[in-house]
Length: 384
Image (cartoon, rainbow, N blue to C red; front, side):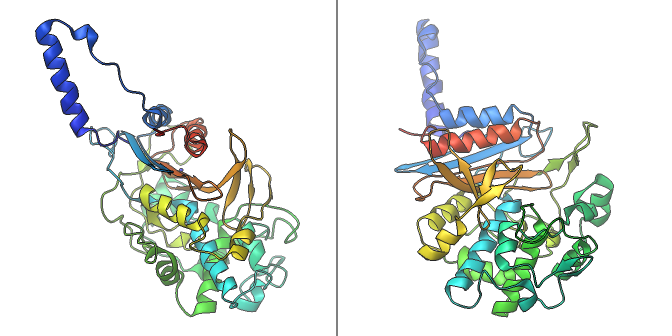
């Protein structure tokens, strides 16, 4: 789930060189374009058909960013520098960090059942909170139904227009999921379900006496100085500079809907956060540098299982993805109505990368985004 970087001075120098060359008849001797691997990869993502792209990568002694496309479809308005966007399922890593911090404080165990903390919430149609653990929720091994198809504002243009301002409580979201039987016996298979993280957010509130939003703010956003990251609650607008988002809701009509405005309360714990590429890089760097979790809890987070169909292994709120240069990195994709992001960091936190787009794109968009992160973490774009 993008215009080039700070080049004002370089542009003026380049213009002056062209003027001098033209006056002497030596335009053919103008300097060739300097290689810019990150910009080239951002351009490659843009070429897959998305409206806008933005990326930022960090590494030892490096900090690079690039943009391409426009912030509003059909205009020449550039993508905002360090614009804010809905990070979708990358939110899950934040939620997992909060839960694991509570585990480290001895206030919660990964082996606690959902029933212990949320009596009677997971029940009916074969669902049994006594058989589902906190670890199952964070690792998507609970078997609990994925609720997104039951949210009209996320599944079609008509539903979006009718319900984009509707507020959901976590209890309502979980109640929708309980209308369906579990997909498998808890702990015996893997299946991605946003409902798991709605339940995790409810457990955070039960354990702490504070909302999920407050705990994320107190434990992650403020300590790390993530000034452009927010938990919007029911507020439907994105504060600060941002590009608009577009989706075709999976249709082939060729007509996308502007879906920037959204009450994302249905995604509490699972996909509600708003952030920037810069803030996400700070978060992932801090996480894997050991600033947010004690070694035991970070080890639990990165203890992964097979995730069929994902193309990666999955830990607790984080995926383990192979690197083309050898080894692997940890990260999480995200998608919420047109905003799609891919974020990750090396296991030691020395390199991190975030790229996001503002529309669905084509079938190769995700591949191009993944390739950008892969090359950044392997040390290619922006080095030197």
